[in-house]
Length: 305
Image (tube, rainbow, N blue to C red; front, top):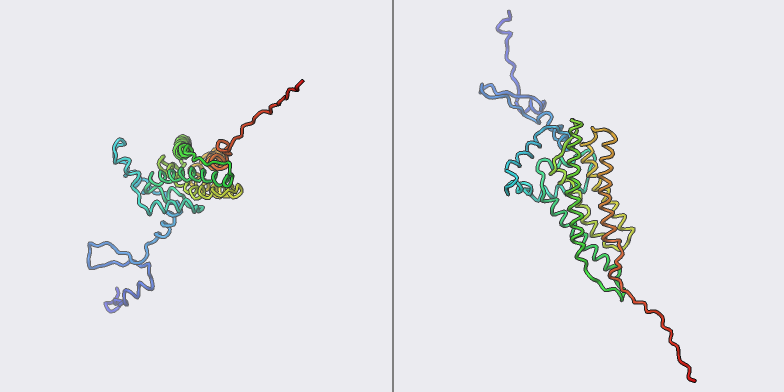
């Protein structure tokens, strides 16, 4: 049995000095028996979890629950649709920036959309793109024929309705078809990532933002410049779609996954090239002056006898 003199209490230095030497130390306040241990210093794993969330590797259901809490009202009420436009300017600008600067390894849905999917940004992006294409198409034709004395400029307002039909049909019908396809494949392969219809519409809407400045620059009457611009816009927006939907199909059959991504990119290419070819490169034969061709008349002079 140890003697009483051998039992000595060691006197520690200042707490701040000890914590500076060991920042991961856990301190316990023994004066309050009901209190829980307090941890001073940086929490473990917080940096890793933040990196996972930024990279889209966080598999928790927290964001899905937050997205589901907003749709508690019945669909026939105004409050149900009001939640789709409940977004601030900072979120819209942040999503636009994310669509313009796609970075490999970052999932656009998880990083920008899933916490608060909206229709405000996609709706106004599509509306702005419609008027940008229609107005730029009219100005482009005017600049092409500028200086021709026989050319009379007539605004083509029908281009607004045609552009609106094309843009809004693409921004709604293609996401609807893709959403149905992903639901069908999710029933076949249970471990693939699933996106909601609103999230897919949101991705497609924000991916079209790059075409607004591109359509304005299409006014330049140089075909080479126009095709360079359309290829740049197609590369940026197409990469956003490909990197977003590849995680949703990569666990599927290899051929099915590749065919899905190729179809998404091809439809996006068809939209880009079609708008450029129809609204900017189409010849305006209706406004060109026409000359009437008068058949040659042969005048026979009668000889006097």
